[in-house]
Length: 354
View 1: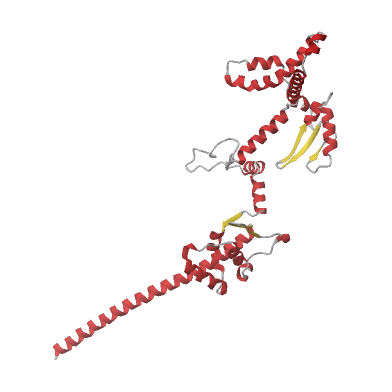
View 2 (view 1 turned 30 degrees about the vertical axis):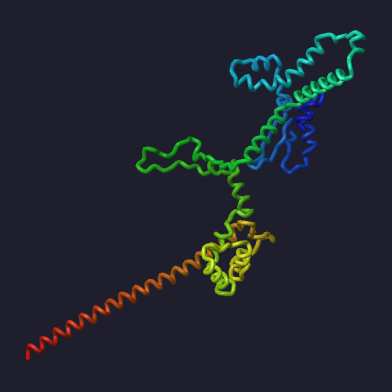
């Protein structure tokens, strides 16, 4: 809409503002203040932002005089000249053509020259004129917003070919001080909770966490998920078949989506999962991964901890019983030896007395 207003004869920021209000007045993220002229409000994820439409059209056109463009393109600094070389190649041609047509009288040709031109020459001339007109149209339709969209599309196409990792920098306090009092023996860090919370909110961190929790934030490989939570299965046909399969194949056994689905649908496991909210599926199985929401994952982790704690207690009890029996046997044998020695000593003493 802004680009169209730039190309309309007599277009202005006031007209664009009127069209903007008329076209988006019913949108939930768009509003305006009646007592403020040339303003509109956009509801961003971080909060409402008020814009002033005055000068939007003029700034979007971003017109530069050809004298200034030619001066900058002829700079001895290669970086500066490269920035304006394309502008001269496109806009300079259209302006040059326009200046010639406006400053000079149209060329007159004799009838003999006009009649002597061949049809091929006429077609080539027409093609050159059409190319010149297309260059002129392209040059006239370059705006700040169109260039921004083009650069943004190129940037997004490059980002999609990579695996970027973004680092969010959060300032603990506006003063950029590490401690409340650095001269103290044990200085306390200076952390302003309100400032940190605002940064997390405005940078979209809290919103990203909320979106992740609303979807399937927990992801496991099928084999890893099965290895972690197969301890929740009770003794039964499925577990016996699985243990026989694992004992036969060892580490080479392949765990697929069928085994994971059977694990999650087992009565002893499905009873641990919380009831789905508003009919939403709490877990999903893909080709190589299983996806869970936070609530069922927490329930499975808690059940896994209980099973492992019970197993650890049984192992500890067995180990302590074994150690107690070993110590008791050692003490019993030592006691037998001591008793034998004492009885022998007492018998020898009685024999010597008689």
